[in-house]
Image (tube, rainbow, N blue to C red; front, side, top):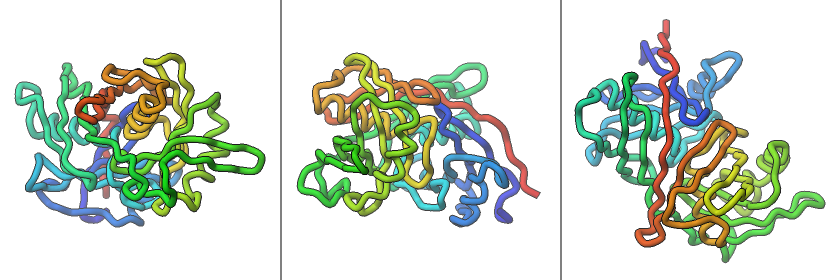
Amino acid sequence: MSKFSKAYKYQGTGNDFVLFDSIRSEALITPKEAIFLCNRHFGVGADGVLTLLPSKKADFFMHIYNADGSVAEMCGNGIRCAVKHFVDFYLGRGQRRTIIVETKKGVHTCEYSVDDKGVKTVIVNMGAPMLEPQKIPIKAERNTLTIKKGNRIVRGMALSMGNPHFVSFGDFNSEDVYVLGPFIERHSLFPRFTNVELANVKDKRNAEVFVWERGVGVTLACGSGACAVVVAGVKQGLLDGDVFVKVRLMGGVLKIKYDTKSNEVIMEGEVKRVFGIEFQ
């Protein structure tokens, strides 16, 4: 990390990140350095590494490393962390309430609210879900899949929120995600691997989700995964569309609305800066 003297630790719903600000320098760490930083014993400890870079299309570009050094297209919790950093350090509390962020998925419009500690809550337009098999991508003709592991059969829906997801509804517990998550993530149906969400429906406006994140493992939350759950739930008649659904993850609650008229997904959640990091 010789290019940097400082970084920051952020978390959104327990999904935590090391964040580098390279809007002026354009510097980027290597995948190997990202793996080291994410290690919870020898590094800082994080689910991923975010780097804010300059953009010609938006206020900034958000680059994302997963904990294994792979690059992610989009991260719902990460984008909220990035917005908080940009507003708190560049704009202050009395400025505009809309921020535009470019990612590998595309450009996202974000709104935010503040308290005496800066940005507290961020609302993100996550864009349209992709349901076509070739765009997810999956090696199947339909996005409804049946996956067998031993004697266990898991049925679910594949879709993309800019990154691939497999969502299954059933009667799951926290132990199931450790067993099924790594197997499904690298199943031959998913050429780029996949995030895995095992969901329980409480009622049409409340769901509980256990997440296995691609390139990371079990995480306390996944913003794009919560969005994928609501889209899949609405498509299957299990959750209500056009209203905010509360998605309870191990790290807390996200509010997700799938607007069926505009075919856009809106995510709302809190975000916190945990501490600063100085490199020697």
